[in-house]
Structures are given as structure tokens and as C-alpha cells.
Image (cartoon, rainbow over all chains, first blue to last red; front, top):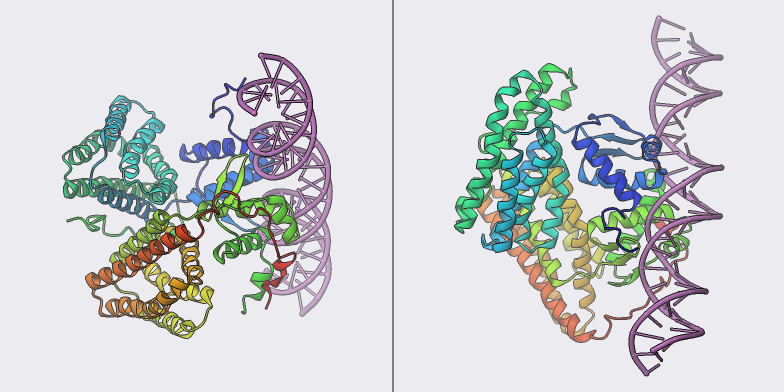
Length: 257
Length: 257
DNA sequence: ATTATTTCGATTGTTGACAATTTGTTGTAT
DNA sequence: ATACAACAAATTGTCAACAATCGAAATAAT
């Protein structure tokens, strides 16, 4: 009777949130597309209330733009945004490492290696959602080790956006140019995480900083290149869309060494 | 102010949000006190919908704890939480300074000096809310100079909690012990900000870092001492505090001026 | 033809009622 | 008395209808 697991027993608000978040991250809903509460509610077979809750949460996460009395649109993630998210995520993780003294603990290490295995497993497939989940599981351990609740919460707030950009990289891979880049990227996904983990295992804080920097810097550059392709191919975009990317070389220098 | 139209025409959700946030920060609502949607709605003369929205937002800000199907309580801010908020705020500002190359701009400097004047003005009074506002105005310029929207948003998310702790410091000043500490604190409020601003004016990034660190460290230690006092004095109030919202039948309308 | 004004449709903001869930209470059996 | 089940009260979650607002088409004015 009471066996219904926590997942099945989610509230409608939660269901709508998960549904919309996945739809956005998977690219089924396109940037700047209008999100109409009644339509979403009808599609999910629920009423507008829970949908409104979900949209507000998504607005906090930055996946959705909200304007009072005007409604929500799927957020258009500019190269600038992407840079910021990677920069913040990376630096939050560096702060977490500092706080934990670069000590994750046996269980944490175990989880990270499990996540690495998952990355290797999906490395050949097209299952981007699995990639995102593995990546998140890996990095989450770094943040959790800080034992700072607010830091974790803050980091989690950036995760959906991070996932969205993961996906946008994948979508760009449908273009011919990207096909070439893809294998490189997939290899990097595994190896760069391996190098991070190794540094942490050694307890080498400076090295871990450095690996985190290059990891997020690479991602930043990838998204930047992607945005260029998008800009040239599809979007006859408005000027504010293509905000110039900051110096992509020293993307994350921060307090490292 | 001149934003009269904007303020007056705020949505009920926004009004409820501002009202509740101020009530919590001012200490009129006590930690762990249950927040019952119907009561708040009735007190404000509106319905539960907007109140729910406000509570969800407050939960994101960390001023309120939310449990599904159980409702909201005013967040109990532990010394640990206080430490984390100061730590994060300080480090976000350091990141911002780094990004701006420690260059705030003429207007920014002007605003910061204005904020400093406000601090000096209220230095002798009991107007803690004014202190909070001035402090916020000062530090916000640092963050804005980074020109990183996400960073600003993230920093703003911490502001309500920061304000709440400001206030809790003040409340503790009602105790006899704190009376001694108070003048010191008020002097520090001005001087420590002066030192931060001077470092920034010189463009001395390292010095600014250092001043920010000591500033937030001092605040952290203050809140920590406060928590010790609270623990010893109000020992028995953990379990059953008052349950209902006392005053303010129509306090909501008071926003016009 | 262009600009200003009005109307109207679509969408969000708000509400009060109802359903589901949690919590406290009462009664019963051991 | 204690533990446990059924019930009752309080509170949150959801819904469908209504009101307020925005945007665009239609109309009028210059």
C-alpha cells in the first residue's frame, strides 16, 4: 500500500518541472519559444497551477525567461551565458575542493569512478542525457565534499543550465563540421575527468585546480565554437545574441596557484 | 520614491514576497515558526495563490524551509549557515573583482561613496534596515562591475540571507553583553568598507581581496559569537514557540508613501 | 499614407472551492 | 498503562472559473 516509491509519488508540480526541464534540455523546445501555461497543462493533463510553479522554478534556474504579465519563453543561452555558467561552476568546485582540503572520502571516490564508468559506457552512443547525468554525478561529489549546504544548493542551481549546454553541443553535432569534432569531444569527456580524479586521489589541490580549469575551459571553447556555427548557419540573429566571447584562453584562471 | 507606480502596481505575489521577506529579516517572524498559507493570505487580504508563490521564492533564497505536503517554516540560520553565506558572498565578490580587473568605473565609485555616506548617516541610529540597504548598495557595485549576469543573480540570491543575519546581529544587541560590542561594530561597518573602497580605488586587487576577506571574516565571527549568546540565553525555546501570526491585519497597504 | 485610438482575442494573475495528505485525538484491544 | 487502529482536524495540493493585462488587428483621424 505504502510501497509507492518517492519517484512515482511526485506531485504534479514536480512532474511538470521534470518534464519541462527535460524538454528544454533535450532541445524539443527551442530557444525563445513561447511557453503557454494552458497548452502545457493540457498536454500534461493537469491544470495551470502546477505548471506555473514549474515555470517559476525554471526561471530561477535560468532555463526560462519570465516577464511579468507576459509569460515565459525558453531561454536563449548566449555564448556569454555559457561562459558564465562554466566559469561559475568551475570556481564553485574549486572553492569546494579548497574547503574539503581536496579530500573526497572513499565513498565519494567510489561514486566518481562509477560515474567515470558510465561515461565510458555511453561514450559511443548517442545518449546525451546519460552523459549529462554521469558528468553531474562526478562533479557533484566534488561539491558535496565541501559539506557546505549553501554551496551545494548554488551549484545545483547551475546544473540544469549546464545540462542544456551539453545538449546544445550535441545538437550542433548534427552539422557536418561538428561530426569531425565529435570523437575528440567524446574522448575528452572521459580523459579530462580521469585527470581531475587522479589529481584529487593524490590530494594535489593545485593540480586539481588546474585540471578543473582546463576542463571547463575546453567546454567553454566548445560552446563558443558551436555558437559561431549556429550564428552562421541558421540564425540571422539579433545583435544581442552574439555577444562577443571573452578571451577563451585564460577562461578560468581564478585563484589557481 | 518616484517608482510609486511600479511599486503600487506590483502583483500580489510580489507584495507578499516583499512583506514576508521583511517580516523575516526584521525578526517579526521567528525561526522555525510555521508559516501557514491561509493565515498569511488572510492577514494580507489576498488569496493563497500569491502567498504560495512568495513562499517558494523565499525557499529558494533560503529564508524559509519547505517540505512537500508539510509546508513552510522560517529558516533557522545556524552559525554554519551564516559562515557559508559570508564565505560565498565574499568569494563571489572576489571573483567579480577579478573579472573586472578591479575597475569599477566612475559611476560605480560614486554609488559606493554614496552608500558609505548612508552608512555614516545611520551609524548612530537604530535603523538596521538602512544599514542593510547601504551595505547592499555598496557591495552590489563590486558585483555589477564584473558584467556577469549569472554571477550577479547568484549574489543577489544570497542577499536576503545576508540581510537576515545583519538583523540577527542587531537583535542580539539587545542583550547586555552585546551593548558593549555594538559601538565597535558600528565603527567597523564604516571603516572596513572604507578600506575596501580605497583598495579598489587604487586598483590594488590583492589588497581588495584581503580587505574583503577580513570584512566577511569579521562578520562571520560576529554571527558566531552571537549564536553562542543565543544558545545560552534562550535555551528552552527550540521546541514550541508561538504558532500564529500575531499582528498586521492590513499591513500590506503601507507600501505607498 | 501615416498615425493615433478602439476593440477584441489570447494569456497571465487571482480567487474560492474541492481533493489529498499529514497530524493529532479518541477509542479499543492486549 | 501501552500500543494500535480508526477517525477528525488542520493544512497543503490541485482545479476550474473569473478578472486584469498585454498585443495585435481594426477603425478612425490627420
